[in-house]
Length: 561
View 1 (cartoon, helix red, strand yellow):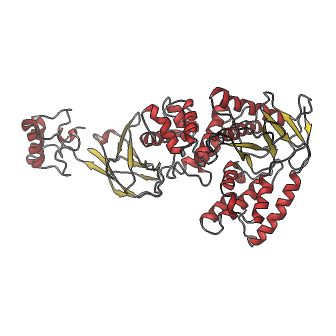
View 2: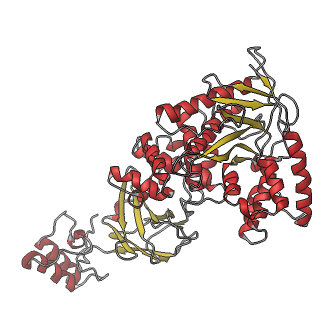
């Protein structure tokens, strides 16, 4: 049953707007009018951190378009939780005027009515009039708007999934701050799907925090999704899954890395409500910028980074995440992920090359039954450079990769024949890995090598003429570095170059004979270099074949291939 409450939210908004006008005058009325523009202005040194956060708070909590069909989708933010946490972490840097403005935005709201969820886990606070009114539809005629009932139902579902099914800690109690001990969700007019506010420190030995959630009050004009019940219902579902997972995360560490918090929360939308696929709206942010660090926490890239926990779940299982969050109580995200991967005999550096490979096989490059189950619905990863022929010397990337990031470079084989060598020379001291995907039109050959003790890697593929194209993935597996330089070279070594000196002559005949009769070194860089007649073995016939070619104008090595 609905319960009436006194409402102060509109007074707070009016006060906040008044102080925004004062603050904007202090900025010379040049304050950015876009959430990401504020981020850029801060990175360029045009505004300081306090100004950036104040500006972003205004943009998030006082949206200009609130009615159906008038919302600017480019201004919609997936989650305001990162902003709320960044304000929390930097609460000491604001001026008194900024502090008053911020407090108006972040104060726990009041509402006209409240409704308890069916499982008794949540209290939903809402308005039926004013700028934050929820849609009035009430099909079951119980005086509770259907919109509110659905939020309650989806909240119960998400909470049960996380706590009862997966064994996560429940969000810490707010000790009755919202009127009782139920978890509070407020339906608000904001420029995003939702926001989770840190509220008060918990009583654990680690940095747990109680919290409460704000969810958009109608979702009019939000991006489309695949929910068969409609876009608004789909948005309600995924926002409950997303923000309640943030509330669970705060049971472990209020200071955890934001990229990991957001990546996990977006992925849990898919876990709890797989029919919605709202997360597809953000995947392009990752696939168009594979050179950005996995740990990027600026802009919206981290929402697309849900593909990393998707990889972890599909490679291992859903139960890998709870041990990670248990480790997050005392570690940063990468260290926590490494600690959970110990039981699988690996770590982030070892599996990251496979992650880059999975990301290649999406969109039209999907291989049914391999890699991501829904890969065909994902966008293709961006190719940094593409060349129509081999070989090439000293290719430099257009977009230099950060740590835990990489490029995709495509090389068409053309008329090349021989043994292909792909050479990567990367900047030090970061650690590099190179993966080669060699396609023949039917199946692919995968080669991977990691630089050990240096930054040089070579990949070799005999019989390159049997293939159509090569895609090389140079990647940095050292974290926390940015814009790393490298050179990539493709070299086609001729058959018969047994001593690996880039030419075919009598020295190669001697090398083959020494290998056959004197237990000398096998032809380099691959044994196929000495198989001059391409019969699949190295013997005296190969030396005779090469002698005929050199001295009697015989056919070139492997002429019949």
